Image (tube, rainbow, N blue to C red; front, side):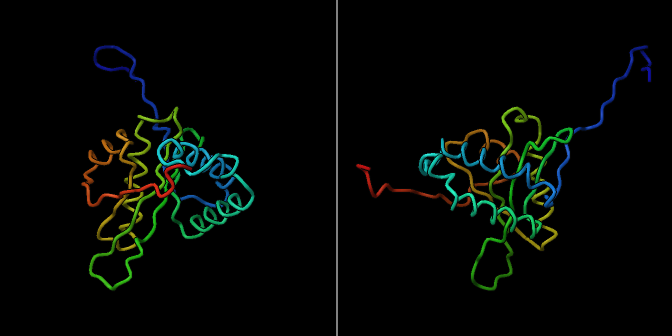
Length: 174
C-alpha cells in the first residue's frame, strides 16, 4: 500500500495475544512460574532457591497451576507464540455474604525482554474482563511497595491504594 505522499505504508499485525491458559500451555507456564518466584525473591526473600525448588514445593506448584488452569483463572500472554507473561485471578475469600463481590488479580509477571511493551496492561485488562464475567463488582491487586514500575502501571490503569500490608521480623538474628 502507498500513502498519498508516495511512501510505503508498513502495517503489522499485533503479535501480542492474551488468553485464559489451557493444559496445553502447562509446559511453558511452569518454568515461567519459577522465574516469577525467582524475581519475587528480590522483593520478598523466602529462602534459597534450592530450598524452594525442593520436590514438595515443586509438587505444590504443579497442583496450584493445574488448579488455576482447571478453574480458568490463569491468564497468559504470548508474543509471536512465545509465552511472555502470566497472572492469576481468584475470589477474595470474604467470608460473609455481601453485595460487593471482590476478585483479586495476583502474580502479574512479564519476561524481562517483553516488559514495557503493553503486556502487563493487556493482561490486567483481560483479568478485569474475566472477573466481570464472574460477576465481580470490584477487583483488587497487591504489589510490593518497592516495585515502583508496577505501582505506576496500576495507578495509570485506575487502581488506588486500598490498604497497607506491614511486616515484622520475629527472628532478627537468623
